[in-house]
Image (tube, rainbow, N blue to C red):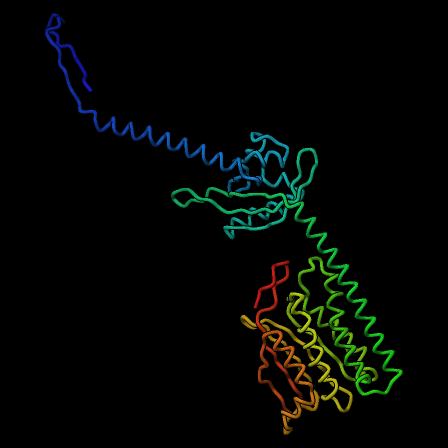
Length: 375
């Protein structure tokens, strides 16, 4: 790059020129690189925009306070508003429950990520759409929080399929329960007509069948149909056993305690039968004088579940435990424990009562609809 300056004498007559040449190679290279970078940035912005617009979900970004900073066409369609109308507006204003929507933003800011958070979007013309809200925080190069990137997927069809499946499950469960109750009634009817030993033990058989029937009743009552509340299940089993087995033994009480946990229906059957068997054994053998308490408890211990069936009856101290266990129907207990993949933990067995503890793999899940954790 050359700059030229005229040289003049005292009378301001040009007597020559001063030429200064500067090597401009480095600057030209920088300018060329900058042009390449600018073009690359434009290409990247075009690619990112195309990617965002081609997504089937409604996408948006908000600042940390929940104000919308960008959206795609799907978000415009979901809300019935233009991009210009949405940008700068509060995110929560486009949902039927603004407080829940705002809570979703606060949750992703605190937890860095939110998945399958259910919201109902409301468009300008009043149409409502159930969406699955998924979001994560995003940052600049210096790791300064910039806001939240979120997607809202229309799950109306999925919710309808789930509702249809739940209705079908409830109908099947109701019919199964009715059929099992018919079987219980037939057993009782036959027991009155014959003195055969195999029939006279009908009460024990009735409680076993009722434990299964009650499971299907709880499934039909569940809002999800995928899990069964353990505490409610134990209380229903205890209620049925009190009515069927205790009879005139009003001095025997069955108490139920436990954490608010749930179990998947497939393993609820052997679980309920195990509880039924251990409780029946205690009723039959622990209280020769017809009074006492049986305590049923389920709680999570580490990565296992512990079922406790304890009584304050005569106990087994000084007795042949092998014969005592055989008398108490341990063969059935062993079968159910094996089906559950569990183990019987050595427990207190003395003159003041018997406590049976069974450790099972983590079959239970926390409330809220999460899928059961496999053993």
